[in-house]
Image (tube, rainbow, N blue to C red; front, top):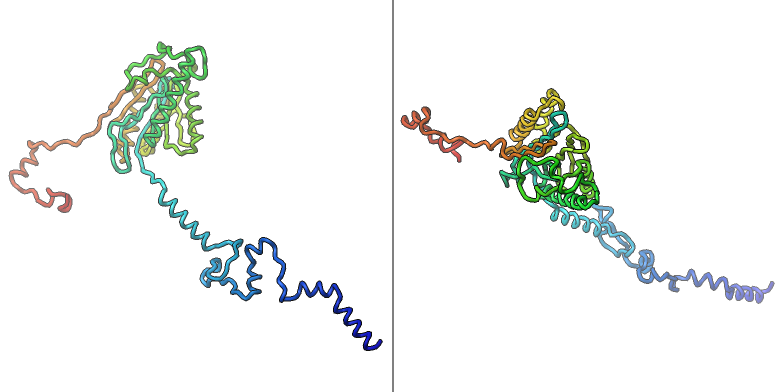
Length: 367
């Protein structure tokens, strides 16, 4: 081959279309192809090729980007951590503050499970403050069904009124020959006349209801709230169809225990100790009404003596086939006695003037 042929061959190679395609995609002076997303938010690699500084990481925290350009698709760990801290502060700022409450309630079955006895104290507390010394903790659900409530007073009363109104409606419909859960009509007052006038007119108008129907309704309502309501109940009554009394402990999440005796509340541990030590010896069949009332009252008094949130008086409710007996302040509140001026030791000390000022003024001179 001659030199002319070599030059022709070089020209052919120079004008080769494949070489032009290669040069077009590998020439640094020609702008590289970019996707529409990269045109809006270029990748860090494209910026590095243009001579911009790459992102740097802080030496103390390898996860927090300290300086440099950040891609919009990258996770800003520092900002995310800052948002989480603000969210936690807001949650702690608006977190509901719960307050402790105090109650002692007790209940038991007597006279071969034909009589139900409920007992409760009357002190309502707001944290460390006594809000009410005559609070009613025994509530009417139906003419033959009562309950003792512990927990948040507003939640207990709201639930009691809901149950009472629901079964009052069922009793009215039952009186119109539409039976949907109550026992008998709303006018069936001859079955179980109350031996005591109840606290309000609406309690006198409630019909007779099934104990199991009320327990089922309470469990359904509490399960819907998932424990948001502070409702602890001892629910019981006389079931005329089965001719016996029933007692159940209902808890805030809707769980239920059918028992022969129980105690709940902040003083429930002390009350349960009294019940467990004496009730098995009496037995449900051998326990009379008088012994059951005394045992329930002693259990509540044990809660009052061992719990600062329980106190004041003791109320008692007895439910049987003959009706309901409800008594308030069956045990009155203890009061401090006044010192009589005629006491011998006080009179002698006053005459001899031997009372030390530091002792009279209080403990260690304070108070």
